[in-house]
Amino acid sequence: MYRPYSSSLPDSRPFLDVESVLRGFTQDFVTSFNTGNYDQVAALFAPDGVFMAPHRDPACGPKAVERLLREFGEAGYEGLRVETMRVDYSSDMAMEIGRYSLAIRQTNGSTLADRGKYVKVWRRLGAWLIVADCWNSSLPPASAGN
Image (cartoon, rainbow, N blue to C red; front, top):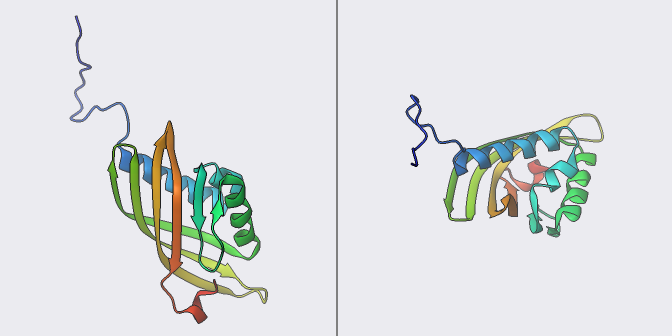
C-alpha cells in the first residue's frame, strides 16, 4: 500500500521550488565571476545560450560566453553583486529580473561604480540553464564605463 511521506514540518517538499533554485544558480554565477572562474559561469548557459552585454556583440554558446566574461574580468570588472527582484515561470521556462552593482577598476588604479538591471531567461533542459542573459547600466554613458 502506498503511503505518502509524512513529516512534522509544515512544508516537507523534498525539492526546492523553481525560484529558490534559480536564485541559487544566480548566486553561483556571481561567486564564479568574482573568483575568476569564467568556465563555471559559462557552464550555466545552454549550448545555444546567448549573453548580450552592452556595447558588445552577443556571445552565443558557453565557450563564447566564457571568452566575453574573461574580457570583462581582464578589463577590471569586479565585485559583482546581484539582487533577484522577480522570478516568473511556467513549465520548463523561467524569467528572472533583477539589479546589479559592480566596480570597474581603471588603469590609473581608481574604481568606477556601476549599477543597473538585468533579465535572464532560463530553460529546464534536464537542469535549469540560461538561454538568454541581457544587462545594462542605469547610469549615464559617461559614468558607466561600459
